[in-house]
Picture (cartoon, rainbow, N blue to C red):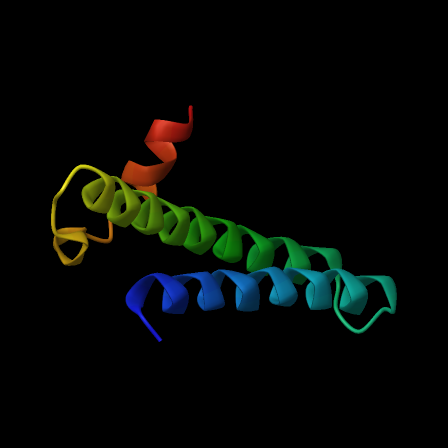
Length: 82
């Protein structure tokens, strides 16, 4: 499996984690503050993974080396979203 596929697999895992958290809240296995804290963590990590994947794809598209893409901090990545 190549690096892009590993990143996509990780994204899929995190989306599944989000679904499980929502189910756990709905069934009363966790409280809303626990759910919110974990969802916030997942959101930050998802943003970082999508950013890395976009960097890799851009480098590939423009003839660069996708392995030179760097994981950026959540603060830096989220600054681009605003």
